[in-house]
Length: 269
Image (cartoon, rainbow, N blue to C red; front, side, top):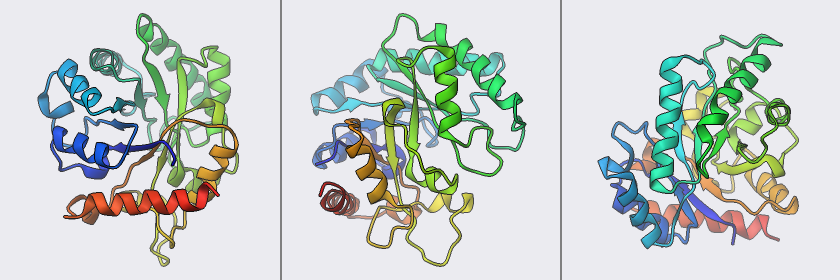
């Protein structure tokens, strides 16, 4: 069995308690709560209590999502990052998630790399005194200011804090960015989701329709998961699915379990 995990976006309409119960029933190692579902983290439950609720079910809080766009740096963004770190620390969450701007600005070669490093150096002292790691997720969209994981790995090395910054490997973003290499030692978590419709282009327009992985998957999830396992990665594989029909499915737990088992039967050969 892989280290199963569940991003709250996949079951966005469940209450905090029901979401945790779902993850526990699926034998997950942990969950990723979100602040962009139209309601507060943990449905307004205090972070300390929300963390206890997870731990009582044997679940880790793998990370809190998110700040966007983290590399459009200003006082407001600094406050958002600081607040996210404080919430993660209080809840016992292991990481926070930072998403780069995808509006076509700040993409120039030279500028985007400099801004990335400058912002990471601003964030670094905010992490002092905590066990929180900052996860940065490259986004493969054409207008993204951080498309490629190789560029982020270079920045992590330059900033000199590989234990404080890790990357998110998203199997969908990996494919639309046209990347081949994975960076297992730099990876904090792997987000998995698929595109099964054979008639749609694999581009950013499908970001809102990412589904559970099945035999028709076009995102090469099996190959990607197997590559991470072969590389010695022992972190979590977290379903981050956005398909609206999944969110309202009366058998969502059965569907997710079936997809986890499909992946494991093929990637763990």
